[in-house]
Image (cartoon, rainbow, N blue to C red; front, top):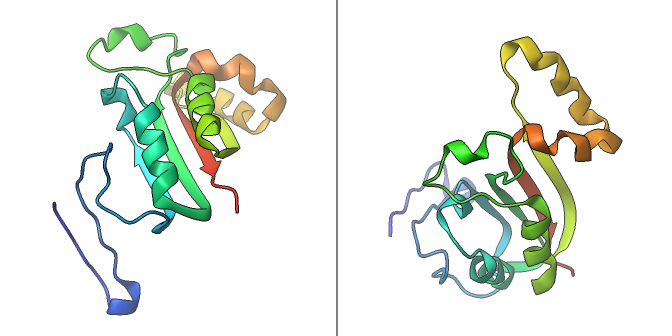
Amino acid sequence: KISYECGSSADAVSCSVADILQLPVRSEEFDVLVCFGVFQHLSDIGPSVREFYRALRPAGFCYINTLNKRFLLAGRKPMLVTYDNREVARHCTSVGFDIVSNTPLLLFPRFLRVLERLETIRDIHPLLWPLAHDLTIVARKPE
């Protein structure tokens, strides 16, 4: 376990390295949980999502970011696991989370940056998933 604290006691931030399948925290301890770049190393995310739900307080938010299975160039990283956004959302809802947002992260080469403006058009998102390197899901634990 690695801990780091900064600022005054009122502003203290603590970070830990722990097993994602068995977080060393009490149930309903956090208001926010952030998981970025971890799922691409797991073959089964179900147990982790259940653990996130356990660790969050009612009305707490979980931010999950991972590699997008539908990305056109996803096959070029065989060492990493990719996930379909619908699959991650299903895991979240199966344990009780409400999905707040389910969005692709669009990172284009310079000559295609004009396409990044399309990201704000919600209706076109399904068409953009093959261009998204990764995805971000925001889930909320009901009150």
